[in-house]
View (cartoon, rainbow, N blue to C red):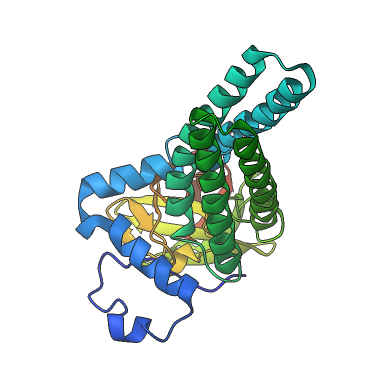
Length: 308
Ligand code: FES
């Protein structure tokens, strides 16, 4: 599992000083500065913007959706360039130029969302993401240069620039894939966890203190229990973002804040209130029987479900 928190703790005044930061690797320094900028002094508008760019509202990383735009548009541009070279028709040239422009617009959105995601990525994926971002910047610069050259009637040079940009972008996309498929960035870390289909006892009721996030296990799967007054909540204990232990998180009313990058989840149904998480926490039904707290997967079909 990756190490904890690269993010800024909104409740702490002990985040790294610039003197500490000077001795860190360059990717870590850039990430800290970026994280601080995105934190925006804790203003709610900054949090809303981060939620939007992370894709909290979408239920999946927005970056993944937006990257299709430049990759698709620039692939089409390469195709139109080839057709123009082969057939010499003006409409293919215009289509190639328009595709490059569309790709540049998409690249701006992909960069904004990607930077926001990367600000909460821990090693070793952080370094891969850093190189991925730099290469994408290089690729986009080639395409921008290509467009400008084309407008100045240096069409062949512009086509060479866009071909170079495409090669750079392709390698950057390969690194993006490595981040997801090897380092599991953006993947729901609760996926594959097994929760009971029928009610099972996990803790004596008397052992659950008031308002203290408590971890219990069901066949090796950690479950978070929280007692709030006369209610007991149960959700997956592993944070869907990067696997942070929610039992070590902070309660904020009826929600829990992850100790790693401060995603906030509603205890009631596990939905994401604040990112960087985008996937909700699996939620469990809870009841108390014979002095024991029992849980089962939410929505499982037992007829005797009685909320605790
Ligand atoms: S592990 Fe990143 S917010 Fe929980």
